[in-house]
Image: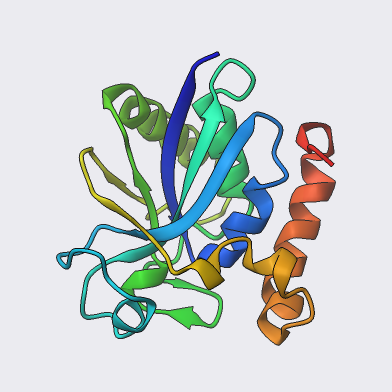
Length: 179
């Protein structure tokens, strides 16, 4: 078994975390930060927008059970990759759509997937997802951000934003769910 990592940003990391925890072939999900200038930033620093980091998830996955291309299909289905520096009411560079590629192969696959999605006009607008080549440091978020949705399902943001994205995933990718 070969485990790969993907670092993806698509708005608030609570949404991505909740979805990827239910994907067959995913072995671990860690919410965190990537793409900024400060080492080991805090959530408060990220929220200011001044550090340049994006909220991301680091997804560890078994690449024969879940190829990177399939992981990206889920990623693009659960967020809007056509809006720069925002997802819904979450606005700022920390909410940008971004793929921090771990190697040249991931970069090639990411560029191919975006090219294919743009050509098929799935979204009606051009994809603005950033593709960033490795290496980019990943900084785990504070403990209270990990598995946030499962631990806080009644929280307002979770009910209004996270739950609908999770429901969309569960419906569209039912065959790829672990539960």
